[in-house]
Amino acid sequence: MIVNFIRHAKTSGNIEKRYIGRTDEQLCDVGVRELKSIDFPGCDVVISSPMKRCIETAEIIYPSEQIVTYDELRECDFGSFEGKNHIEMENDPEYRNWLRKGGLGKFPNGEDSTEFRLRSVNGFLKAVSDNKHFNTVSFVVHGGTIMSILEKYAVPHKEFYDFMTENAHGFITEYDGETIRIINRI
Image (cartoon, rainbow, N blue to C red; front, side):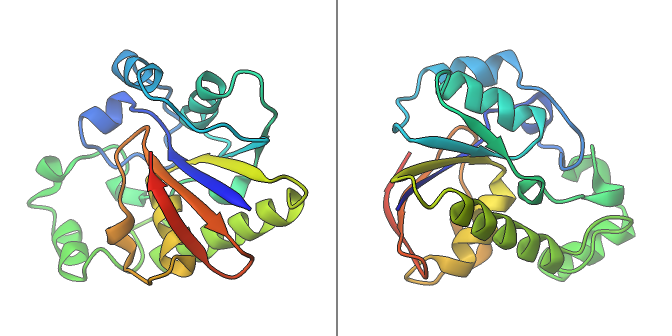
């Protein structure tokens, strides 16, 4: 199965480099313009996070395709960091501690990063199982969701942050039921 992983287009929070997880932001004008300037691969079905920014991105890229949402593909809940950027938190002891731990562990008043990654992987497995009769599937989701899935299945293996991708970009891959091979970047 060919699987395209596409990160949603920019929101105002992305432009301001804020932690935007559970906040249901819509795309900003800059994001929509950038999105419309990119040539995306075709697909048989679109899998999306239920968040506005992902659904809007999917509707712009694939106006004629069926869009199926999976709650498990939502972005991480950043808890106390939600809506803030690194400048606003540079003196926050919780933020500094989280950075010292390599961005791992539970976000204060939010989701545990390990649980988020597992949720993302389980959502991916559920979506590909539900849509296994299609040859090409496009996932329009969040950066963290893509990084979680690729960290688990991509060969050769790389770490979570090695799969970071810009808004409205991503990866064209091949999934054989056990591993993901990256064919190209979007």
